[in-house]
Each structure stands twice: as structure tokens, then as C-alpha cells.
Amino acid sequence: MSTTAPHPVVAVEHLEKHYDTGAGPVPVLHDVNLAMASGEFVAVMGPSGSGKSTFMNILGGLDHPTGGRYLLDGHDVSRLAGDALAGVRNRFIGFVFQGFNLLPRASVLENVALPMVYAGVPRRERLRRAGELLERVGLGNRGHHRPSRISGGQQQRVAIARALANRPQLLLADEPTGNLDTATSHEVMELFARLNHEDRTTIVLVTHEADVARFATRRIAFLDGRVVEDAPVTDRVWSPAVAAIQSDAGRPP
Image (cartoon, rainbow, N blue to C red; front, side, top):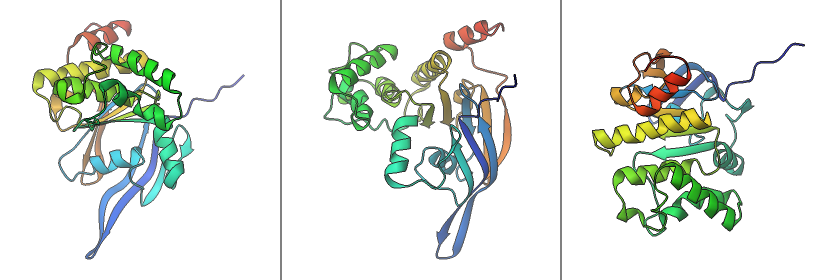
């Protein structure tokens, strides 16, 4: 009996994006064709103005392509808008931002539970799950703290836990280490590598830092709105999580 190969979690076909200005259209993305399978950990790189942030915004449903298609889990979401697009973001996509974006007057636990409020999860269940997620990111004893009472690295861990609240198929991280020192950045990237390995969640991470990109399994580089590199990461940074992944795959760390 023949079997059909599973569709990729993310696929973009002939993706185009331009912005209309008084001087005419400004092109940002040109004929981008990419696919990402379940469980991939992709670092997206490129200089300022290369199109990488626009590409990430389209993947997250925060912007629309001008042309081409964007398929999420096999469904064309290119032209969705309003409540339909918000529903897709809430159910299928988790976001981690450079600035953490935590609610300052809410507790850490409440911040993690927030996406589940919009998903209609009952209060007892969302608090239980938020507590479990905080345990996973090493902050199980900080649930009742306010964000201002924990460090920047811990705030980013809270943001990662929040992004995982609705068990997304796609986790998007936009410069998640940009506000962190080098040691803390590596701790956060270690966490991303471990979660990717354990949950097989597809992670797409935008970064301009080469050492951060080395935690990923695949590197995609943009220049002038075009993909100029798409290759496996062959020099992954050594870390306990990455070493365990390599060991599981039968490769020496």
C-alpha cells in the first residue's frame, strides 16, 4: 500500500512582498520558496533590510504577502484576515520577542496562562498547565512573582513558556537573545534546543548573531529580499542539550 508523505509544517511558494509608498512600490521579498518540516530548528539570518523580519511577520500572520502562497500545516493562510487569522495565530503559532512583552502587573503564572484565556481553556486547567510550563523552563518556584522581580534571562524563559501554552506547531522567535548578555543568551538557546528536541516543535528563529544561529539545525540567509543560503548547520555549538541530541542520533558531540 502506498503512503503519502506528510506535508511540511511551513511552506512558502513564490512568496512576494512589497510596500506601497508615495514614490511607488518598495520590494522587500522576491520569489521566496521554502519548506520546513516538523521538528526543524531553523535560524534565519541577514543584514538589516534583507527581508528576514518581513518573512517572519508573514509566517506569524502579522503581515500578508503581496503574491505567492503561505501554507501552514497544509492550509493556505495567505489571505486570511481578522478573526480567522487571529484564531490561527492562537492555535498554531507561539511567539517569543526580543522585548519579552510580559504584562507587568500580572504574575509570572498569569502571563504564561494568558494565551489559554483567549483559547477558552478553563481557569483551573490553564493555571495547572502554566505551572507545568514554568517547571519545564526552570522557574517552577517563581510563578507568583511579578516580571519586574526576576532577571532578564528569567523573563525570556517566562516568554518561552507563554509561547508554548497552546502547544503550537510553530514557534517563532524574533531576536530572542537581543537584550541578553552572552552567557544568558546561551542558556536561553540551550532551552530552545532542549524543547525542540523533546517536543519536536518546529522553531524558526531570527537572529543576527552567528553564535546563536549555531544552536539551530538549519540556517537560512536573506539578502536583498532573496534567499542566498539554505543549508544544515554543520558546526553546531556544543552544549549539554545539543550533545544529548547528537548522542540520540548516533553522532559524537
